[in-house]
Length: 192
Ligand SMILES: CCCCCCCCCC(=O)SCCNC(=O)CCNC(=O)[C@H](O)C(C)(C)COP(=O)(O)OP(=O)(O)OC[C@H]1O[C@@H](n2cnc3c(N)ncnc32)[C@H](O)[C@@H]1OP(=O)(O)O
Image 1: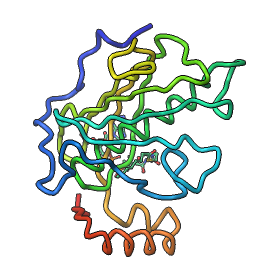
Image 2: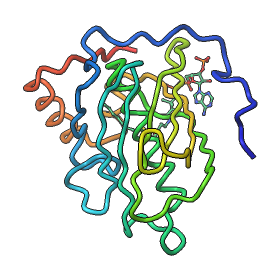
Image 3: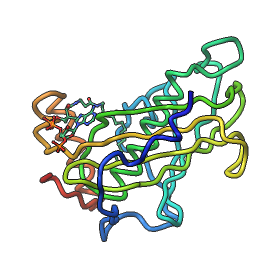
Image 4: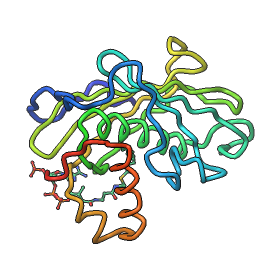
């Protein structure tokens, strides 16, 4: 059953205003971490999402569905589609707001099957902010930006401090990633 009738965002929000140094419409977004299953170029069987910023502002991510992503023969696995939407929504939140945030809640509606060999064009947007909470939603269309909708998703992302990653994750890998971001002169607000 679709959740389209439920109020979204579920709480009162302020408009999500992009960071002044957010990538401009037309910018391609690189890999945020080479070992990320969603976008990383060092994960052979990963999803390899490629994202860019468009007017809106929105983030459009392309997911080329291969045999590595199957559930039923010839069809994408729903869990991997949810993963693609987590990445696409997270890319929109992270790149447009330039604050570290993690997924707290993710809902997906699978509207039509996604065949192997197709490309899903996922358009993600920010729907509102309430304190540390950012609400975002996305549509995935088959084979073109104006193709038929196959999947819809919406999620809640919670802004976290850098200690979220240093406490729970791999601190050394994080430091290397931060040094690399500094070399690229990327600006992030790290205090929620
Ligand atoms: C350029 C970058 C691109 C990045 C792309 C990456 C995409 C992939 C993103 C991910 O997959 S991140 C990995 C998956 N997510 C996690 O591992 C998060 C695990 N959860 C946590 O660490 C904590 O639960 C969390 C940081 C989300 C919240 O804990 P906190 O102790 O910091 O805050 P708190 O529990 O007070 O929640 C903050 C607010 O969010 C609300 N909240 C949290 N979880 C919720 C939930 N599940 N549903 C509804 N509301 C929720 C909570 O009620 C509260 O609302 P209020 O401010 O109004 O009181």
